[in-house]
Image (cartoon, helix red, strand yellow):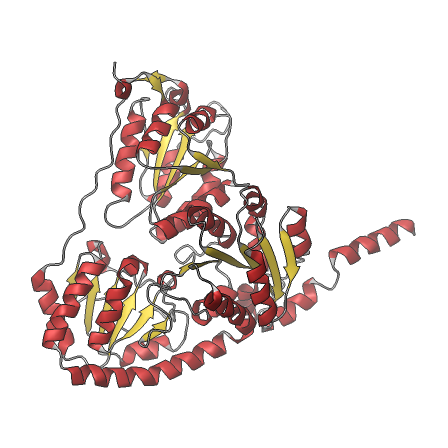
Length: 566
């Protein structure tokens, strides 16, 4: 019997298949039901990153997948561990990130109505399918390799999505023959020349064109800049598209999906080219987007042509090839004077957008200023792993000046909290030379703050900026705007720098742009994470910091001691 047909365990088939596909790192926590998997991962030389919670494992894999574009793997045990990871997988699904989740499931012969087995879930795969739309429960040890090949084939072709493989726990230890099934991918479709010509003809006479660019176009940054110049078109980015082109590029309007000025700008346009974007409400908040009569849409996913817009010129093809072809056609069909006139129209809007972003982002001016100073001085790419927090979507998204090649990892679709730190850890482990800065609010930070310990153990040199407004600031503001008395939103937070130090990380407090820049530079020299705490200057902070911090933990302890003595 050849090596490929060896009688080996289901766990060995999994590890061997992952290694054959180039997987060198797995994020996960061992449990009673998956010990053979972890033993075989070690045999194959696959590195194991140990988070402190399965949700952290999922976010780490998501961050690593976003910055590399490669499939990342999470391994959990059964039941609650799968559900812990599922929130992170939802985030990966909504943002089109290739994360593979592998876990044990109930045995093949498990009673249909259950019998109280440890971690029992009657239909674990069905629960995952509710989020991911599909799952693969194998029925023999040898089928594990086939499941890996099929999952990676789909994840590496077209629009990327997460996938799930469930291995009945009795098959993980069981032996059986199997073969490697290498993943097979199809080439990206080339744009149809007739579709390119039709789109170019529709755009040739445009006087107020705009490009809307999503993360699906990250590989086409240079080409998008050339198309923008050929049209004289302004470029609007989704949150995760920051860094596709330089924020200082002359036609770049930025990631302005949160600004109230966006609908007015779109209403004034006479043509839009949407490239690799869902045009989703989670990215572009004013809903529905007032798009013009001419909408050219470039996307790998043909079904995407029927979402969030009435598309007049669909181009279901690769972003880079399509953009090159469209630019070439427009240079022959479009008058330079029209492009110059469009550029003049754009300049007026740039002033309006800049002013609106400065007003919206005023509470986080020191944060963005320090981050910009740091980015300017960084020789390596800067990766900002953000949370669904006001400091990120109102502040950093519009106020941080990313260079082409920098990255903004943002949990757009699902809007999960606690994403920033573990995603930043995953990104740092995947791209060690990058400068990684995670940014979270004080409320969201507590969802996954335990992953600081994982970063210490992994000696991941990154910064975590916690912007403190005393609780859940956005929700507090929404309550106040409704005329309600804010309730349940002011939080008594810990001494964050001291908490970091207790885990073996560095911790410090800063107040100014200059201090933040200095702290970020110093963090590069520390073999581990640095937590940087700063308070927010906003209406939410004015209210909640006063209420939640009236009694600090140390003061409370002293008060308790005095009361006990009395």
